[in-house]
Amino acid sequence: MGVSGTYLLYGVGVIALVALVAAFGASQATARLRRRLARLMQGSSGSEGLETALAQAMEQVNAATTRLAEMEVRLKAAEEELSYAITRVGMVRFNPFLDTGADLSFSLALLNRRANGLVMTGLWGRDEVRVYAKQITDGASAHVLSQEERQAMELAIRESHHHGDDPPTRKAGGLKASPKR
Image: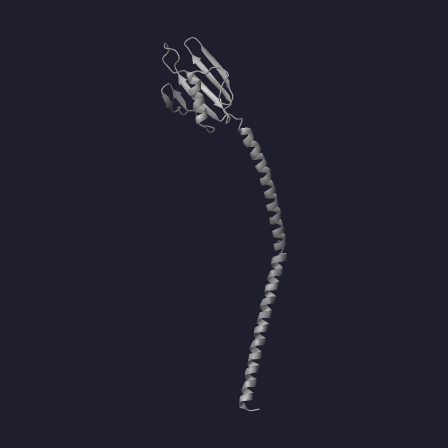
């Protein structure tokens, strides 16, 4: 073997040695990754592993899904009940008598979403106060309604109020805001 054969042999040996070192390094890196994966899956020093954590997370998701379905049923029932609650209010103040100086008489409509409820009218005079109530079904009454009672119903049907809001009032000429307490 000549000089070039010797160099070739040295070259192949160096390449083999470099390949051996690279293979050893890759083997060590793979072993480290396997140890880390095992710790992750099993947990280390008392902590839960990935499988346990995923199983617990799935249990929580399932419980939340069940609770959401229950809440949807309850919400639907509450919405159905709310359709019967008084949510529409209209009030008209007026002066039915010429000998008094204030708008102390009123008509008050209290209706639900389906326009069912009642209209109350209070007539204030110097010597007496009279209060009348008339049932309302589907936006109509079996009794004749006064102009003020019809106006109160129109206000109630037209405007839906939230809890805590004062009902709007209408004076004989038009709508005015109720004073805040």
